[in-house]
Length: 256
Length: 341
Ligand SMILES: Nc1ncnc2c1ncn2[C@@H]1O[C@H](COP(=O)(O)OP(=O)(O)O)[C@@H](O)[C@H]1O
Ligand SMILES: [Mg+2]
Image (cartoon, rainbow over all chains, first blue to last red; front, top):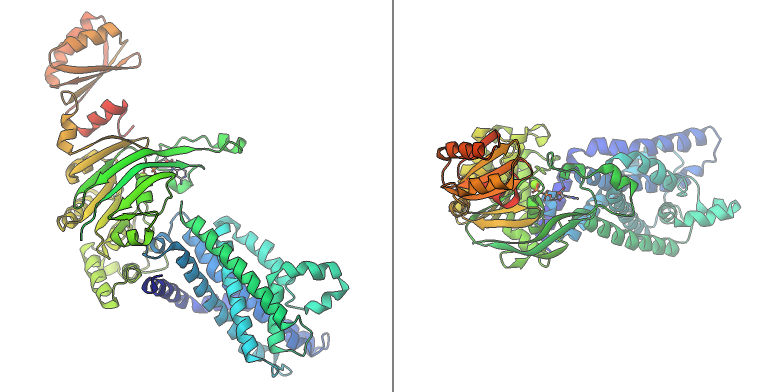
C-alpha cells in the first residue's frame, strides 16, 4: 500500500469536490429539505400530522440525504470517467494497486455523504421550527450509524457506477434509488408496516431501512425502531458485501 | 536509470466487438447485425497472435503496422491496461501482470486518444500526476511550469482542458507522461492529427528524451516517422511480427529494393516468366488475374524492357506504379498489401 499515492488521489477528488461543493450540496439537499418543510412544518403545523412526526421524520431524511449524496458523489463521476474519454486512466496508471483506487473512491464518497448528512441536522432544525426534540441522542451510536451508512452509500455508488452506462443514469434513479427511498422506512417507522406483513419482511432486503431505523435508534430512541444491535449488524453486513462487490466490479471494469 | 522491455508470445483475443472508441479509422469491418443475431456465438477478434518483441534499454523502437495490426493492444498490455489472453509482458525487471505497481513506476504512457482528466486545469493535470508518483509539491510545480512552457501551453495552463484542441491535448498528454521522468516511454501514434510543425516539435522532443538514455516504444502507421526516429523498427500485421531490424537493414532486405507494380489486361504465368528473365529483376509476384509486382534493383530504367516484354507476350499494360526502396515495399513483399490499404 502506497500512502503517498493514495493521499494524492484523495487530494484530487477533494479538490474537484471543493470546486463544486455548493451546487452539489444544493442538488442533493433541495428535495429532502422540501420534504422536511412540507411534512415537518406545513402538515404538522396544520394538524394533518401529529407534532411527533417531526422527530420521526428527521432521522429518515438524514438517511435519504446521505444515500443520495454518497451514491451520486461516487457513481456520477465514475460513469463519466469510464466513458470513451477514459479519464480515469491517469489514475489507473498511478503506482498503486487498482483496488486501492476503488477504496479511495469509497473514502471520498463517504466524506461527501457525511458532509451532506451533517448539514441536514441544522438545516432541518431551521425548517421544522419548534417541536424538534433530539435530546435523547446517543453520540456513540450516532457516530457508528453515520459511518456505516456513509460506507453503504459510497460502496453502492461504486457498484452502480461500474454497472451502469451513461445512458442508463435516469433509469438508476427511477428503478434503483426511487424504490430504495420510498420503501426505505424514511417517511414512516418500520414498525408501522406491521399491518402489511409481507411488505414488512420484503423491505428488509433494502439497506435504506437500516439506515433510517439506525438514525432513529441513535437520535430519537423514544420512537419505535428496530433494535440498535440488529441495525448495526445489518448495516455492517451490507457494508462488507457492497465493499467486496464494489472493489470487484471496479477491478473488472478498469482492465480491458 | 535505464530499463528495457519485452513481450513473450503475447496473445490477445477480444471476446466482444470493440467499443466505438476502439474502432480505429476505417479498418474495422465486423458485421454488427451478425453479432446481434447470433448471441450465443461470440465475436472473437485475435488482436495479437503470439507477439514476441524486445526493446533494448536506451533505444527507440518503432512498432509499425496498419490500423488494426495490434499496436495499441501491445502497448495496452505492457502498460497494465489490457489483460493478455496469454504470454508475458516485462518492463525493466518486472512482469507487468505480476508486479503492476513496480512496473507502473518505470513507465509513462501517451495513449492513442488523449485521456486527460477533464475535471482539472492543464497545470493541475501535471501537478496531480506528479503527486500520484510521489513528487514533492514544490518540485512538481517547477516541473509542470517547465513542461507547460516547453509545450507552448504556458498561457493556457490555468484553463480546464475540455476546450483544448486535439493538438493541445496531445501535447499536454506527452507533457504529463514526462512529469515523473520515466525510464520507459510509450507513445501510441503520438503525431496523428498534428500539424506538420507540431509534428516536428514532437519528433525533436522524442529524440531529446532518448538522448538522456531513456527507452522509447513508439507505434505508428507512418513509415517516414518510423524511418526518421527509430533505431530499430518492428513491423507487425494481424498481431504477428513480420520483420524487425534497423531501417536500413529492413530496406535492404527487399529483393533489389525497387518495386514496380503493374496491372495488365490479363497476367498469364507465361508473362510472369518473361518478366522474371529480364535483367535487374529479382522477384516477380502475381496478385490475381491482372496484377504483377516486380521487385528489381533499378526503377525507371527497367520500364522500356517491361513494356517490350509485355508487348511480346501480347498483354496490354493498364497501370504502372514505381516505388523506390522503402519500408512500404517491405510490407508489400510480406503481406501483399500496402500499409495504408
Ligand atoms: N476493446 C476491444 N474490444 C474488441 N476488439 C478490439 C478492442 N480493441 C481493439 N480491438 C480489435 O483488435 C484489433 C487490434 O486493434 P489495435 O490494437 O487497436 O490495433 P492498432 O492500434 O494497430 O490499430 C483490431 O481488429 C481491433 O478492432
Ligand atoms: Mg492503435
